[in-house]
Length: 47
Image (tube, rainbow, N blue to C red; front, side, top):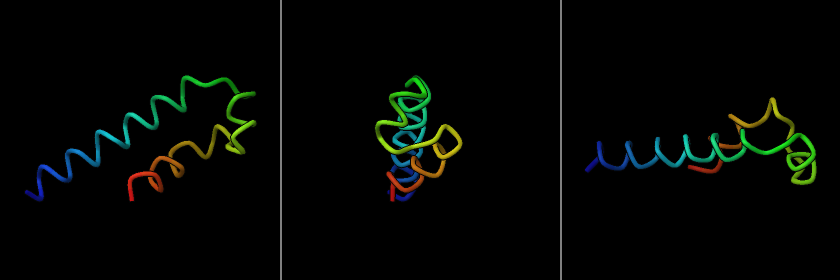
Protein backbone atom coordinates (compact mmCIF):
# COMPACT_ATOMS: atom_id res chain seq x y z
CA UNK A 1 0.00 0.00 0.00
CA UNK A 2 2.83 2.40 0.74
CA UNK A 3 4.14 2.14 -2.82
CA UNK A 4 0.68 2.84 -4.20
CA UNK A 5 0.27 5.87 -1.95
CA UNK A 6 3.73 7.17 -2.86
CA UNK A 7 3.03 6.79 -6.57
CA UNK A 8 -0.32 8.55 -6.22
CA UNK A 9 1.29 11.41 -4.32
CA UNK A 10 4.03 11.72 -6.94
CA UNK A 11 1.41 11.82 -9.74
CA UNK A 12 -0.54 14.57 -7.98
CA UNK A 13 2.68 16.52 -7.47
CA UNK A 14 3.67 16.20 -11.15
CA UNK A 15 0.16 17.13 -12.30
CA UNK A 16 0.18 20.24 -10.11
CA UNK A 17 3.62 21.27 -11.38
CA UNK A 18 2.49 20.71 -14.96
CA UNK A 19 -0.73 22.70 -14.59
CA UNK A 20 0.96 25.61 -12.85
CA UNK A 21 3.80 25.52 -15.38
CA UNK A 22 1.36 25.97 -18.25
CA UNK A 23 -0.08 29.13 -16.70
CA UNK A 24 1.11 32.53 -17.78
CA UNK A 25 2.98 34.79 -15.38
CA UNK A 26 -0.16 36.93 -15.19
CA UNK A 27 -2.34 33.97 -14.18
CA UNK A 28 0.18 32.88 -11.56
CA UNK A 29 0.35 36.43 -10.25
CA UNK A 30 -3.43 36.50 -9.92
CA UNK A 31 -3.11 33.42 -7.70
CA UNK A 32 -0.31 35.03 -5.70
CA UNK A 33 2.28 32.55 -6.96
CA UNK A 34 5.62 33.38 -8.56
CA UNK A 35 7.04 31.07 -11.20
CA UNK A 36 9.93 30.23 -8.84
CA UNK A 37 7.43 29.04 -6.22
CA UNK A 38 5.72 26.39 -8.37
CA UNK A 39 7.65 23.43 -6.94
CA UNK A 40 7.10 24.43 -3.32
CA UNK A 41 3.39 25.11 -3.94
CA UNK A 42 3.06 21.67 -5.54
CA UNK A 43 4.82 20.03 -2.58
CA UNK A 44 2.43 21.73 -0.17
CA UNK A 45 -0.54 20.65 -2.29
CA UNK A 46 0.19 16.94 -1.84
CA UNK A 47 0.77 16.99 1.92
